[in-house]
Each structure stands twice: as structure tokens, then as C-alpha cells.
Length: 234
Image 1 (cartoon, rainbow, N blue to C red):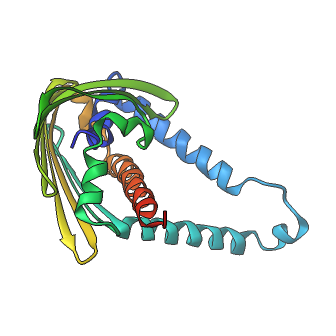
Image 2: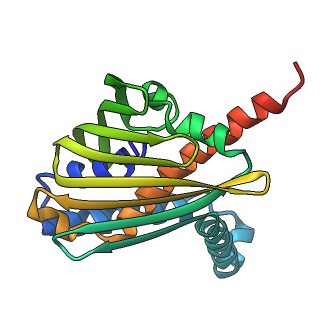
């Protein structure tokens, strides 16, 4: 989907110019930085008496929060160095029409997905559109830009199919399906990507999963936000 493309496409496009050694260094630096933030703070006398207990408790809380998020948005990534396949599914507490309104709000994507600087329907009518997007992504301390133009085919309230016709990938095709589940909607997404650069074989599964999950969470949050507005008394 056009608004989903950044969460995979921008990761793939954004790693242009990175090399394997640099990625390893950034990974180590990022881990060290996060651990530093996590463990820093004034060392009180009480903290010095129970450093291991407090550290273990904090780690457990972080793990529990991560597990809850992982269960809410399921992500699977396959990357054999030539082709990247991404599968995602999650449930939102809104009806298919409300979820659809967010997924197809191409012109307003920058308002609720971080990293997308511009998004616009450039041509097309009815259920066949052409969407152009520009944005940035960060990897460690580095920032990269991405551009894409996609053909979008809409089957209202049920399916969104997209195909990149120009951009940073050799191939990128995406399908999003909306499945009603009572008063909720399940979103099922898959992407088939053939990167244009060999460097992408080093994009780790964990990194891609986290980037994808973060942006799916932003989309889910927007669906919930709009759902609350519609449900509130006027």
C-alpha cells in the first residue's frame, strides 16, 4: 500500500551507500548508546545496594512491553539477499470503512507516518491511481532519502494492490487486505521486493521488522484516533 511502502521501501532504499562493516559498527554503537541511556542516572545509595535486582526488573518490563507490541502486530520477514518478503497482520477496533479511510488517505500520509515528507495522488480516477511519495529514513546516525511512484488499484473496503513503477527498487509489489472480524478489522499485508543494490542483503531481519512494526503502529494509532472522533457525541 502506498502509505505502507515507506515502512519497507524506505528501509531498503535508505541503506544505499552503507557497507557491512559500517552497519556492524552502527549496531554496536546503537546498542551501547541504548544501554547507556537505559542504565544511566544518579546512583543513589539504595541503588548501589540493589543494582542487579533493579536492572533485572527494568529489563523484564522492557521485554514485556516489547512482547505485547509484537503480539499486537505480527511481522514476518524473509531476506535471502536477492529478494525481501514482508508479511504483516494486526487487528484494529474500527470497521473496514474507517480503516479503509486511513489506508487510502494518500495526501495526508505525512501527518501520521513519520519520515514521509510528501505524498500525493498525481493522476488517475476512481479506483486506479498513481501516487508519488518522498521521505527520509535514519539508520544509526545517518539519514537517507527515498522517492517512489506507484500504480494503485483499489477494491473498496476489501483490497489495495500496488506496484512501484519508478523509485529505488527493481521491483516492489504490495497487497493489503481488510477482513471484518465482528466490530473490528484485521489488516493483512504482504510485500514482494527486489532491491536495486547488493547492500540490502545485509539488512537484518530484526531491523526491517522493527521499522515495519513502528510504522504499522502509527497507522493503527491513526485509525483508532479517527474512530474515537467518529464515536464521540457531537
